[in-house]
Image (cartoon, rainbow, N blue to C red; front, side, top):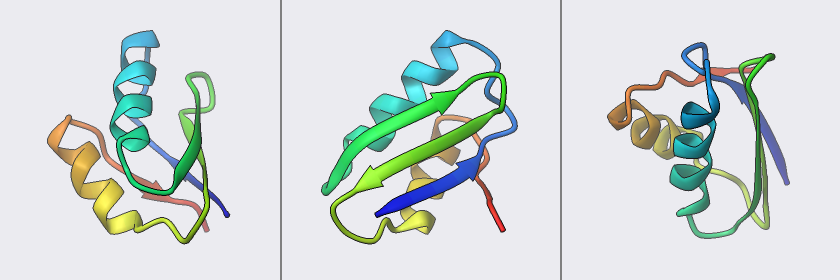
Length: 69
């Protein structure tokens, strides 16, 4: 499964590392790719990703998840 979303606050390598480590802590996540320039996050997982859980976890870190249409 692939899930893509945008995080407008991504601006640097530290943001990238924080988001990757946060999302990687979830069960079933196989890979996380953060694009700093595009402010996008792509998650590969073995089953459906609970985007509301991801959103809450990143919100605690100060990031906003904007769902891709």
